[in-house]
Image 1 (cartoon, rainbow, N blue to C red):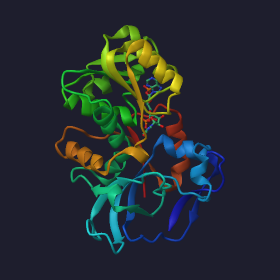
Image 2: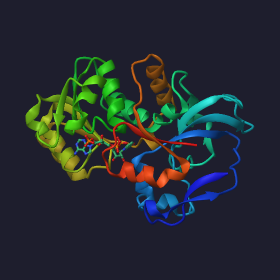
Image 3: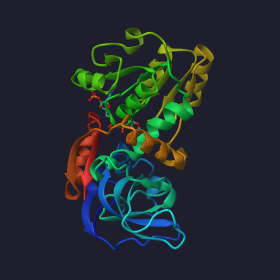
Image 4: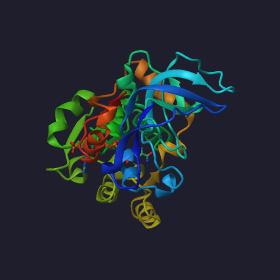
Length: 315
Ligand SMILES: NC(=O)c1ccc[n+]([C@@H]2O[C@H](COP(=O)([O-])OP(=O)(O)OC[C@H]3O[C@@H](n4cnc5c(N)ncnc54)[C@H](OP(=O)(O)O)[C@@H]3O)[C@@H](O)[C@H]2O)c1
């Protein structure tokens, strides 16, 4: 089968197209014929050498965590799916990606039936960011109707899903983005759009109950200024230092939490995301599609940090 492979940890430029053996499903695995694979920052971060331990025994490595496709065959212990089923899902760490290919194996609890109203291209943009946004807002931060939530990078992959979940929960949604995304965010359900290039978000809005931080660094530190005592910041790019967590908790009475969707999200979360999509309250934005051969270009576009919604490879 055709696949995209990283030969050495050398960044996006070390990706090549290769012909490799088709994987075989294990006992509790499903072999999926890939129709589309979503692109995530994790893909190019790993190419650049983030999580090197993941690749120790796995070079050459096939990137890609998100997938939508059709079940080709199933392992002997699998009863939930059968050949021909349309499915979507996300490989969970320590699984090592593998969806930038014509076929990929996923364990049965990493998959759910593809939402009927979405094409494979749309569905492939959902699993990682949908589960991240859902888990962060509800499991980590306990967001409820009537609360105020500030979503950083609201126009990005995680952000655009989080905005829709929060708006559907009847929270008051504040979102940061550059000016070009202001109208897009209002259409998605953001009540207050803050242009991070021209405004200081701490001064531009009233205190919030929850911050979803998909930017990190100084944005995470500054976010403590805008959360009311007792509120929660969920940060996604990296584990914050113990010092920062301690300081924010002590000085602001605000909890700072990090979690990783690739290890921590419960299998049931994908089903909750599906329910929202099927109810029509959440729709992914796919801003660009690429062929498998164009994976390098797609990952370079993702690495600019200014994608609206999602990029997807169609296979
Ligand atoms: N912990 C986890 O489980 C987990 C899961 C998924 C993702 N992540 C991490 O979360 C982060 C976001 O992921 P993603 O998939 O949403 O990324 P993404 O789609 O690449 O985010 C792109 C968006 O970021 C916005 N942006 C860039 N700089 C900004 C700033 N300073 N303030 C506000 N918005 C800004 C851009 O808006 P403009 O174009 O308007 O600037 C763009 O729409 C990444 O670091 C990713 O690795 C973690």
